[in-house]
Length: 466
Image (tube, rainbow, N blue to C red):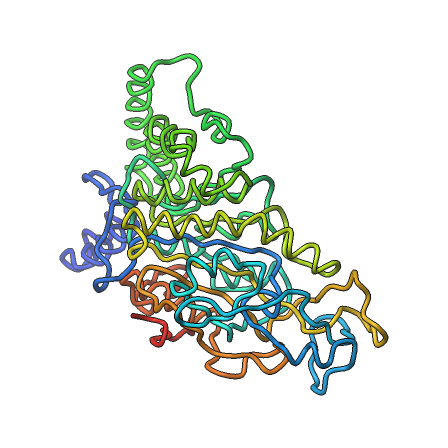
């Protein structure tokens, strides 16, 4: 006797009610018409944002070199700082930022010369959080915490949670897309996995180094069958798979059935969405010609077509991890990304998508106000900064956040968040809130307990909201 038969026969069918609820939650009630797992769903309450673009400066930008000016570092440059602090390795003398800061916009927001073009156009659109902090100064752990809400265990990523809660508005494209120029960031696919959520919610990884859609996405065209023949073949395979699924509950099989269907529909939709050559020349020129510019333009095209969550990575491993030559490295990285980010915000505003798209920028942690190792003498021109989890900066824009705002503060040297501290879980709770999701109610039962993105933590930072 199967468990379903046992529950149906026992307790005059009351057990069947509980089973039905569980199977509906996992989209696995065999023998009935099932909704697509990525079908658009209603949020818990009306949200300001409908889409998310998460721009990851993976490696950890220096907050005192980008959006959190610290003039006291200039005073102590080359000297020991008058405070005690520790990271994962010994640190030495104070390192003043090699970049100049200037005030921009009606808000008078101070921004480094690295992102001057962004600040000139959008300072009053940015909501800068200078008091971020996280748990550990280790790339893998901090990226997992930032993206998945847990630093050690592999759990569903924020993009998977969002698509689980809201679905997507285009059934011909994935609900969660991950863009990387080439290769993998630190912690790899852990950053966009679905873990114990159904596999349909996992991020779809795309290497963007190539330009043509058929080069970006493997097997976009069937070399043997035409679309009608493919449709007949897929329908036949689906009938067999559904028959197999009807005798057992296998979430992995369910996810695979949906992935076949999505892959077939993507043959047309992806060719359109990923082909930036269909954009007018003046739009492509506005974004620029760097890999980051291309990714920002693809992100806008995906959001425009109803994709719910787009994750944009700067590059392989941790490009912003400037342990040495921070002046040269940070200037190079900002030059690669600033024009594309600026164009993205401008383009979203011109198309009426800015107010319903939440843009997030930042790394997994920040950097120390001092040079790495124990350099007590004059700071070398090639000096860099070490990891710092105690205080760093991120910014939000669009999607219901309060533009022209600077929230929180680090100490005089930029080492530790000391005012209006915002933990990563607080940021996650706030992002979900902007999408109309109560982070305490977006749960999934696994291994006998209810899990959520923010675990048992997180408070919505209401001061950031319009």
